[in-house]
Length: 483
Image (tube, rainbow, N blue to C red; front, top):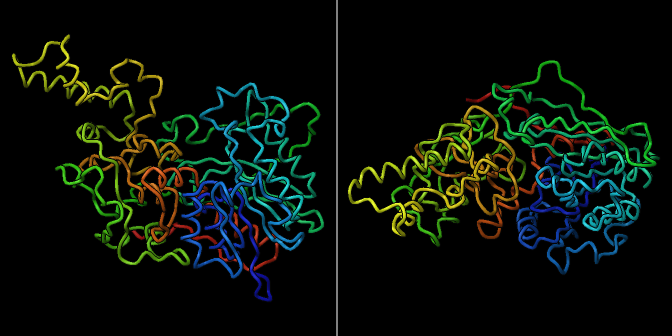
C-alpha cells in the first residue's frame, strides 16, 4: 500500500491453488488476476480468493480460460500499471526428481518445447512491464550436469528491462515446517533503480538430524557453476542477509499435534467411498504453538473458527500395523522388513494349516501383508517411497505425487497408524485452516504438493513491498513459542 492508501496490484500466472498470491495478499497486496490451466486448482483459488479480490478482478482457469498459450499477454493488464507479476511456470525438465532423464538439456533453455510456458511468462513481463516481478521454480535448474541454467534465465529476464537477482530459498528458514527448496527470481524495472535482494530468514535450517535428510530434501548443495555458451561471467545470484540469532525451525509436532486424532480407520469405521472428507471436525484442544495459532485464526481473512472439514486420509488397511511398528525416520526398506515379519508371524500362527509357499493361497495371504512392489526385491531403489515423520523435526518436502499416494509422509503418532491427511499436508505447506481445497482427494493433495508455501510467500511479498516504498504487513515469526 502506498502512503496514499493504494495497494500494490498483482497478477499471478500459473497460480495453482494460490500459494504465492495468499502470501502476497497477507503482506498487503491486491490480487487483481489469477490464471491457471488446472481446472480444480483454479476452482480452489476462486473459492478462497473471491472474498479477498478487488472489484473487477478474476480467476481464469481451465483449458478454455487459463491456457496462456492461447492468451494475448497484452490483455492481462495495461502496460506499466501493474506493480507485481508473479508466476511459477512449470519446468519439469529441471526438477531434481526427473533430472536424471533430462541431463542432455545443456542447450538453449528457452528453445526447449517443454518450457514454452516459461516463454509465456517472459511475454507477459515484456507486455505488462510491471514495476517488479517474482518467478519461482524448481531448484534443480541451478545445476544440470554442472551447468547453472538459472543464470541464463536471469539474463533473459534482465533483457526485458529489469535488474534481476536469484537464489534458492529453503522454506524451513522462513517458518514453514518443511525442508523445501525453490529458486526465486526477483526483478525491479530498471527505471526504479532498486537493487534486487532476498528477505532475511528468521529461522535456522539446522536440526539434530540435518545429515539424515535425504538428497533433495534438506540443503541440496546446488552449486553448479558452469555457464552456457555466450553466458555472461558476472553472476546475478544474490544471497539473503544473515541473522545473528535465528530461531529454531518449526517442527512437525508444533504444526500438527493440535489437530483431531484419526483412529476410526483402525476399527473399520472409515470406509472407501464414505463422505468423511467434508464432515466438520472440532479442534480437540487449544492451539499449542504459535504456528498452530497462525493456522487457526492468525492468517488475514482465513479464520477457521472452531473446526476443520478436510482432515481425512486414504484407506490402506493392509499397512496400518506396519505404520504403527515403524520407527520415526524409517523408510521403505524398513517398512518392507516389518511387513514381511508380520507375514511370517501369521504363518507361524497358522502352524500346520499355513498354505504351501508354491500355492496360490500363499500368494493371496502374502498380499494381505506385503505391498506388491515389496515382493520383487527392488524396493532398495526408492528408499524414500515410504517414510515416517519425526515429531521434533520439520518435514521433508511434500511432492505433487501425494495425489497418488501419501506413503512418503507417514504420521509420527504410532497410535494413529496412518498417512498424513489433506489438512495436515496443507499445514506442512503453511496453508491456513480456513483455506479450503476443492476437488477430490487426489486433486487436493496435488494442489498442496505443487504450491509455494504461503508463509514463505508472505516473507517475500513484504520484502518487495518495502523495497518499493509501499506499506506492508510483516510476516510473523515464532521465536516466542506458545507451547
